[in-house]
Length: 300
Image (tube, rainbow, N blue to C red; front, side):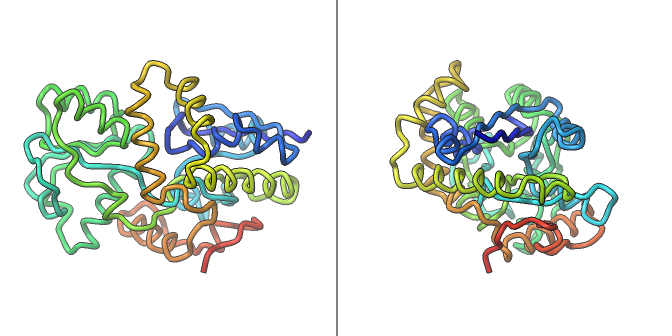
């Protein structure tokens, strides 16, 4: 049995296929013993792959994008999220919104775990032809802190993951008025990456790992992973409402979050343009540059 060590930026429901592959024996079927941990702060994933404490990091594609062209060489080897499972919860609005509604509002955008909630939302605003500067965004603080402040009266709306959004709505904190799953299109959100100089060494193990992820995605989207999902939810989030978690997972599956483990070229190029327009990258990295020497196959 070969080993593969994962260092993740979070313990998130959007990472469900990895957890299902583990508890369902899909990695073991492929001759892999996979271990994983979540880092706090998330930047520990970079330390872990540098020190070889981890073989792969799991997190946002924006991280390899920001480092593209620098001395830190990172290569993407597979995708875990094919869309961006976030929402906008509004305090007083109850009808679905278009993004021009954000103009003149104060919107809380958690960012302590990464920049994507704000940056992708801002990118959608720009794509729609609206002015990002017309909205006052409160950024760079943790989800927990901004939820507490929102509940205390700060802001007109808050950008949240599906689980946090549903919990906030259940607590009387407003209404989900915008779903990035519905309006955001394909977006390579969470990916696996490693040091480019380790691609050859990891080779076949990575191929088998990504194949296991793809098999778990297929089981989940086909509705064949009920037992595995129940086991994961009970083990990882015992303090949360299991029915709420399951609804969020079903929404992600139906919304295309786990449709493929292959990064889509057009979606990657679009995300790179959004990041470049936001000032987060020095250029717009091509998918080939992001893959480095990886054997990962890009969708045309």
